[in-house]
Image (tube, rainbow, N blue to C red; front, top):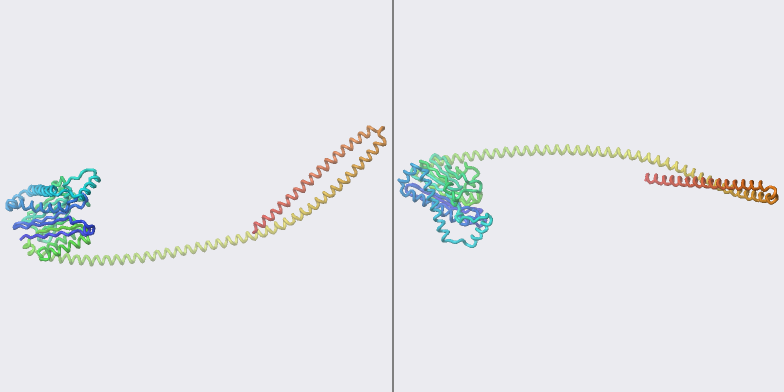
Length: 470
């Protein structure tokens, strides 16, 4: 007997940012088959009615399955004979059905002022007017289980999981065009070419379709498959709806943060017969997980121990480097101190030598000063004698002039020529004496100036030497 379950939870991030839930899910159970469908409305700002589009996608999917499988015997024969042809026709029928629903809604519900503002902003950003079909953009996944066979189709991202009676899990179809945050969409003009489908002439234990919010909550495909085994095991439980909702809420809070929609179909009689197999698998998985956790714990403990050893070794190495650095620094300081003492001793030696030179220079300057004083005294005495000699010469000259004048008066007439010669001679001698006196005075003045200048220089040198000593 076929049964179905479905559940939709609002994403934790959608609740946080006050965004509506854009996922939808549905299931259809008939006597000979059961169908499950989910749809994820796009979250981009231009998809202003994606939550409506996802709801219409689920309805159109179930309507398509119901319309094609109304004649169950004929459909079963046709799909077993040519599954690709039948599935292609179903995909075209689904697209037409979905477009019909959104056209009716678009005609009956004009854009609100807020929606118009969003669309105008998006058109301005993209530089072109958006196709109104994109307002309802969404993905769709459809799974159908029938007596003895199964099939499915999808457009866009999500998970299509099939659990078989031996406990194996398969993901038969995926959307190859979904990369990162980009995905195929029912609203695309080429959506017919983007459909992926499969047919299997075998009845599985369960078939589950889910939006990408579920698979993004798992860190690996293996863990995702394990979850589908556990989900299949509890599908016929009376508490399955409550447990499933709690699980999905936990996934969105701790995992993807996105809306999550899940729909599944299963054969309860087959499931009841194979529960022991699933339970053994679940127990083995638990045991393997426990062993893995123990091994992981040991690995983490070993890693922690290795890290502790590495940390200690690093501390020891740093301490050794610090000790070497300090020793090197002490050696450098000791060498600097030794060099400083050496420079100090050298400065003291130079200071003593300078003091000795200063004393010698001072003694020498003292002697030079005494010599200059003596020379000054001699020069003064020479000037005094020169003045006395000059005075004597002046007296002699006056006396000679008086004598010559008397002689001239006594014998002026007879000795005119001799007098004339004598006067010329005396005049020449007077000129010579004056020149000698002038030259002598200049020489004495020059010598005196030089001696005084030398004395000043020596005196200044003595001052500079004292300043140098200070």
